[in-house]
Amino acid sequence: MHRLFVAIRPPADQRTHLLSLMMGVDNARWQDDAQLHLTLRFIGEVDRHQANDIADALAAIRFTPFDIQLSSVGSFDRKGVVDTLWAGVQPRDALERLHKKADRACVSTGMPPESRAYLPHITLARFGRTGAFVAPFLARHAALTGPLFRVDGFTLYESRVGHGGASYHPVEDYPASGRTLGGMD
Image 1 (cartoon, rainbow, N blue to C red):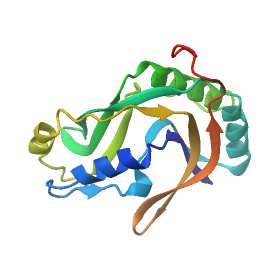
Image 2 (image 1 turned 90 degrees about the horizontal axis):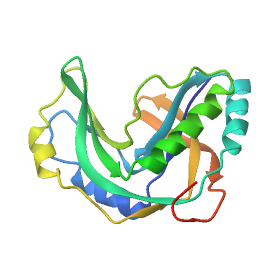
Image 3 (image 1 turned 60 degrees about the horizontal axis):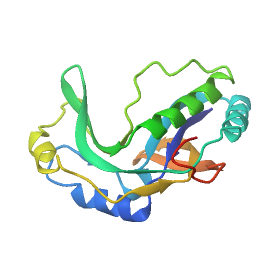
Image 4 (image 1 turned 90 degrees about the vertical axis):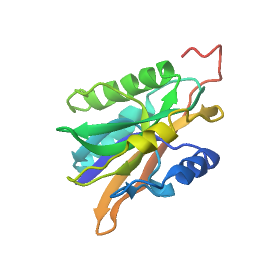
């Protein structure tokens, strides 16, 4: 079985900036450089044949390159307990369109459609069941921003879970299919 997801890898300067923020929260399991990504579509466990079908379906996605930038921080909670810290990105429209295309590609292979609302973000830290007090971190980095960076492709990744946590391995890269024409795709 293969545990897959589709994501965008931020450029090295953006990852370095995010890594510099990662401190000051008790119980945080901070992401490392190799784990920083912006998920377009979580796929989950699939067998080799479906993984190949998904890889082929993703290859049919067409989009023009677009620009985004880091914008704010936030947290997700589960049953009232913070379990994730993240950095947001803006603008979201092109990302949402690309997410929908990735979702449709996955659905075309027999996967169920994504059921959760899409909120583009880059996970910074995860927490155990005890959660964490993150208000000071959120206040300190509320104005997070960065220079625009170009999204000119996406990647299908395999997630492998081991004793040290998850490691992500690129399976296939998918470049943008056109040149930028007024930001429309």
